[in-house]
Length: 199
Image (cartoon, rainbow, N blue to C red; front, side, top):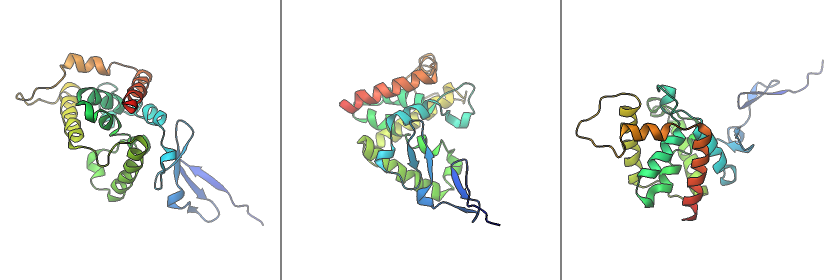
């Protein structure tokens, strides 16, 4: 009996049912919001689109969704970009763009997955090239990222704060910033990128 070769898709992995083999690593891809094929292990700048980044990150929840309310990676990027000094605004806005394609992998897991980190760095280099930001980014970006994390833990997760630390936003100001729909965050992220890309 002649059995035709059949290729089925399971998630984003294509499997040949005749040979039970997966497609080559370099050919593996995900389909993005804009309809592009993004080759996770072998990306090119043509596969990166700001619309995908803004849409995906506005719908990706920080802290692996362990928050009392929805708080997106997109909101995190917008708030930090507003707070950081002018020369670093574009860098901060784009610093988590790799999560558009990898998802927001929690830090304890990421630290133990060398292959994931290697893949993430490769994606970051391609993204930074696309959006004309340096790789690696300036230390000021990491400093603001850490400040944002501490502020988020106190204001959103109710972690006890260091009484000696002063945050750039009050809790009321912070909660106002995150009280936006994902569509609004997506729109603001696109607008800020457009503004920063011109300057």
